Image (cartoon, rainbow, N blue to C red; front, side, top):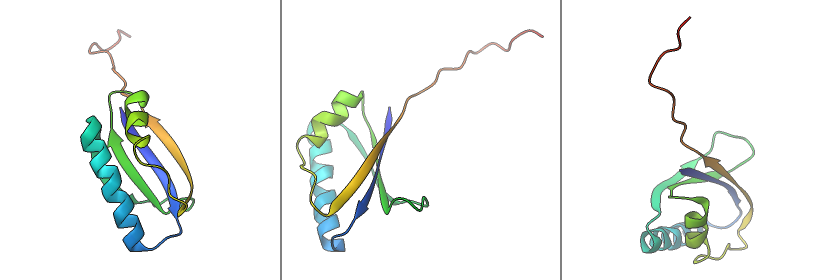
Length: 92
């Protein structure tokens, strides 16, 4: 599953880079795929991290290793769950 972690950041770019590196290290440690930090076109959020994990619990295992810093004022997590569509077209 893909996981989008939208967040606002009130710290410096240096602090963001340091926290991003901690997340990358934690993701490697537990086997969550780190897919980068992105600028969000959504007016609500400053940034979005993207991850790929086996499950939400797998993702939570990673986040437990990196406490949320005070510079991250608030965040929202969105789960993108794969959908399997049938191979056959319905008969009309």
